[in-house]
Amino acid sequence: MRLRQVQAQIAAELRRHAIPDSQLEAEVLIRHALQYDRARFYASLAERLSAKDLEHIQGLVGRRVDGEPLPYITGHREFYGLDFIVNPAALIPRQETELLVDAALDFARAHHQGDIACADIGTGSGAIAVAIASNLPRAHVYAIDRSPDALAVAKRNRRKHGVADRVSLLQGDLLAPLTNSVDLIVSNPPYIASGLMRGLPMEVRREPQIALDGGERGLEVIRRLLTQAPSKLKAGGRLIVEISPEQLDAVRQMARAEFPRDDITHRNDLLGSARCVVVDRA
Ligand SMILES: C[S@@+](CC[C@H](N)C(=O)[O-])C[C@H]1O[C@@H](n2cnc3c(N)ncnc32)[C@H](O)[C@@H]1O
Image (tube, rainbow, N blue to C red; front, side):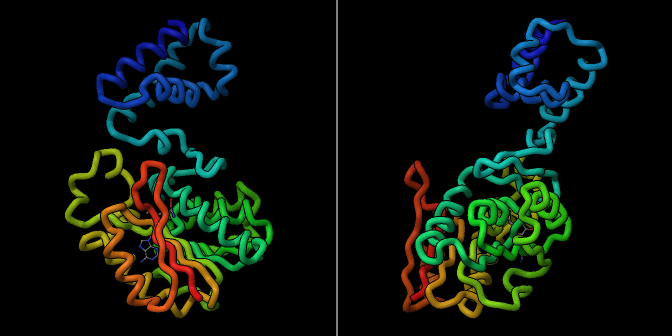
């Protein structure tokens, strides 16, 4: 069978299983199996595939229709223009989290010409920490996670992007492993309410529970983070926490209780939904 027909068949199979972007996903799965870049893929549409190649491709398609997220199959995900290694030990970085990186880089460039100490709490694959370090050549980032398995993924990503000397990996609970105070604290914490975990789409349930479950109303990890933050954030520093839009009022109130005299704002995504709460310390 020719590559063009294989792509059409796989796209139809993915569509039958309600997988969106079926044409593109079919291309990505085939390219991953054959190790083709885009140019080679499009130049080879008339090529006949061997039985071995077809079997390999069908194996990947089987995993996909079984609910495995595409990035776990390919082992890669793009975030902030960088290619990250991902596996089931760490959350797949989400596009909406790029807003948090924007807010971090804006602050660092405007206030410290990028010469800052930053803490990324719940670093997972290291996506946020590595994106910040890659864009701020004078910054040092302390990337903290409770999960040793997630930190192993972050370790590979800091090496891949050449920032191992400026991203320190620390294992432990929230800000506890941090011995010094920092200019910037960023976090995309687990913020899904425990009661909603069972109803999550099958694909999301393949990601680590520790990365998603935020306790009652999804606010427990954020609450503890905000309680710990005042002792670790320098005067003039910034704290940025990603939230789910409906948590805005609750998180603003919690932030106000811990930072009574500081400036508390939020950032909306392109659809106008609140995605980050930002505390600017006086
Ligand atoms: C939503 S994921 C974010 C991962 C990554 N920062 C990103 O944006 O793609 C949350 C991360 O927080 C970590 N985590 C959960 N509870 C924690 C805690 N108490 N202390 C430190 N890390 C924690 C999880 O292991 C997970 O890697």
